[in-house]
Image 1: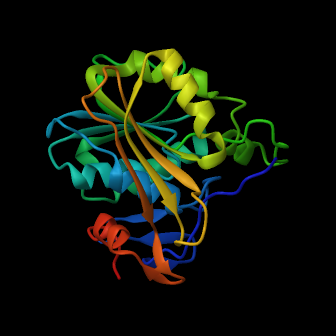
Image 2: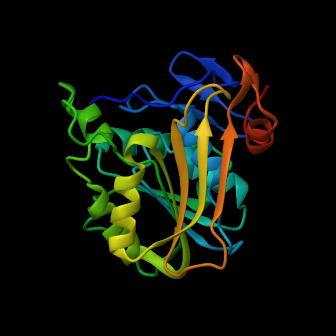
Length: 249
């Protein structure tokens, strides 16, 4: 079984191997996984309840989500980690050229062994999700796209260890892997608190889920189904509002 990343037309300025958002530019020529709707959705949707909190971006790639979270939460400090040296170098350059360089630290690390001096108030991750699919001949893309180096169980165990007691873990996952992710989250001790089913357009089935998890149950599980586009090429009101601080057009 094989699945592709979730892409629709991104309404931002593209030049060669870079994308320009309102407040920063993301270069991606050395990264296996490029800027796409998955990371943009999660970066715009994930929550932080402490304005001056600590955020961890697991598998940062280009640094996109770290930059988005830093823009949304101007008092927060962000740590962005990736196992791939080329991605870390690229993310470091993207961060250095942004207005948020003083609040984002980028480092090469395997989250399974990563240690932090204090827990994080929010963790975001656009995880590898190919499970039993054929691997890619490109080792860098295999590492970024497949669960060979980070299974859902390992991700949840690491997130539990690194997350503050009242912290939030936010991920985006394809529909086909939702039950597997939910099961591993439950086994680790997490509770679902927000679940958004994402459709590209009304007539299409749900493609992705945005998932928020906590260490403690909440009074209410917030569940919604939302659209990226009202019709091909026409962004929905929800998507426009979510991304208005990032997209140039």
